[in-house]
Length: 300
Image (tube, rainbow, N blue to C red; front, side, top):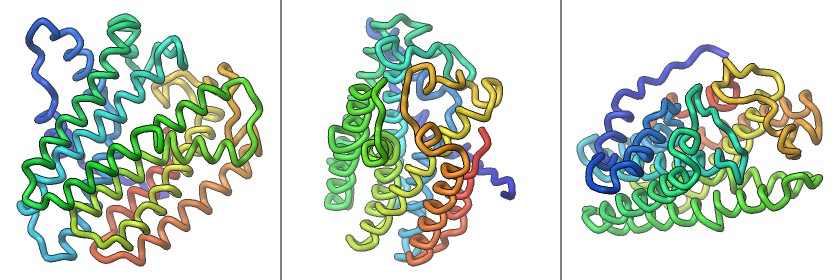
């Protein structure tokens, strides 16, 4: 794999624009929320959203100034929701992790109660930002559909639903169907949302958006299986978080179910199918193709 670097300066700037100001009697929870978002993530989801929107909008003949204002709030919202999921994942009642991206987790820094509230605050702030954007959009139909996707893929039909099954079944042996269900909802749903919202805001047709959803499913599952692989073969220094946490929490993963060799093969199959589907869509897809490769073949 050739090394791929994405300059996320603009994306980080967009995210900072939407973070709430640390002031008022509730400033402690706001500070915890802001730190959770700014804690050095790869910005995978807002970058995928941005690039997908650019791809479709440019294919429709739109200039950047025509679409950037509509996609920016959703970029911030998806990263806040992703950050909320990590903050809650790390809680003592969940994975009980004290390290995230090489730094203390939110609950470990602020206490369990404030960590819980910070996660709640992030998901609610995300919906406020996205809802406000939809109300003010020049393309209300696109914005409303984007808001629907965000809610669907974040909640019981998406990430939260997958997380709930994951928690309920921790310690129990899982079969392939159960594991795929968890991976599709818990991890892939927000990647699907990122691509789909970018496509919708960029002017994609319903059929194109359906194809993008399939691409997101493949990338998301491959991404999670790669995470399983790295939990087995990487180091804490490389990952910036504890390794062998799945084993410690008695979780079934693709690696524990089928072994490293088959896990690697499944990642290759899923990513190859995602690239083939992407080639069917209009626009300049070079960056998106490179992002798929980076996400599914990453080493940390």
